[in-house]
Image (tube, rainbow, N blue to C red; front, side, top):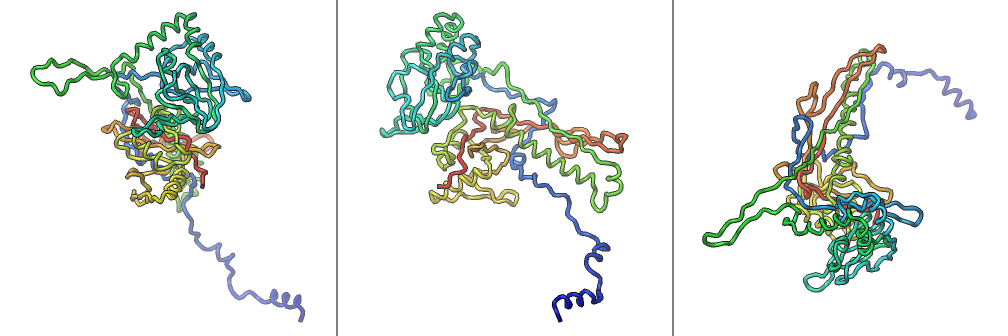
Amino acid sequence: MSVGEEVRTEQAEAQKSLGTSAARNLATTSKSVPQMQEISSRWLLRALPWVDVQGGTYRVNRRLSYSVGDGRVTFVKTGDQVRVIPAELGELPTLRGFEDPDVLGELAQRCTQREFAAGEVLASFGSQADEAFLLAHGRVEKIGTGPYGDDAVLGVLADGAYFGDQALLGPDNIWDYTARAVTACTVLTLPRRDLEQIAERSEALNAHLQQMRSVPTQRANNYGEKEIDLSAGHVGEAVLPGTFVDYESAPREYELSVAQTVLRIHSRVADLYNQPMNQTEHQLRLTVEALKERQEYELVNNAEFGLLNNCEYDQRLQPHAGAPTPDDMDELLSRRRGSKLFLAHPKAIAAFGRECNKRGLVPESIDVGGHRIPTWRGVPIYPCGKIPVSEARTTSIICMRTGEEEQGVIGLRQTGLPDEIEPSLSVRFMGISEQAIISYLVTTYYSAAVLVPDAVGVLEDVEIGRWQ
């Protein structure tokens, strides 16, 4: 018998039982609830202590501070030519508060572009400081002398930083550290003589410089706050100093931000396709999850209250070797007391783990809600995929102290909203349209406040793609 005849014989045989495809039409199908890949652990929302805000605004009162000009400078690049935006010169302490556009424009034109190769010295310890440096691109180390005569790295500067601005106020300044290029650098220099020449023609600039020269005479503590006069160690009937604590005259106010959407469900879907799962319930559940994901993203990245944008520049650090090392994490911790948590992109945590492996270190882990969380010096490192990763494969690591009593970072929300289903999250019925579509307004209110500047610090430009 040929092969073809055998196949025809098998097909001709009668089916002896019910097929699975037909039987499935009578069976009850087991199914999952709707799944959503966007849902993350949202550790920031869990770790932040939330403060109830009535009236939608939270005011942060602080002691009066004399600190000025502590920002970064922005540049414009055309081909291989770089120039500073004139208004950005106001970020220098010497020019902070000076707003004459014509004078600032002339000062910007006087800035000279210079290129330095890796390893070159921009300024030497002990030499006369007669120009300010604006770092457009690259990395620069500030090197001082250690207690035993060896070199000590005092800090690392990156794009947008400036140094040597004290040279603009007088001829008697000298460099108290050496500035050396770690990578190829592009800088703009502003000589003091050019500033003085322009000040001779501008009465406004000359008056401003005279006022700035008086700022260092104001008594302030190490944090720039107006000093409180005290007496200690005296004996007998010494005359005690009188004092008072001065406050900022215009404290910052944080207004609650909002994330909301309109959820629409057709009445026919809600009526006819509601078993065994409630369509409205699951539509609402996934919508709320998306709102919470957006809420955490805004707490990290929002231009007004996001943690990355509200970190003071003196609390921003650069890694010494690019990848996040234990030394960098120690430096980040040393900038504040009572650090409660790190927040890092999962890839940054992996990069830190590789650096620990190179040194034979094994970070401890703790159990948080059934999850094993890595720690460094006892401070948990929570993963947060909302921290951006640049095209150059760099990201940031955030370290913060939390809580009102600790003068740390707090989350802000308002409870007691109409139709509230969770604290500060409400779902309001908006009615049924002529197309029989049911609408619900889903809203959440939130913000975050940094009570004192050192409550949050950021390790910037962390390399996550280094494997050697």
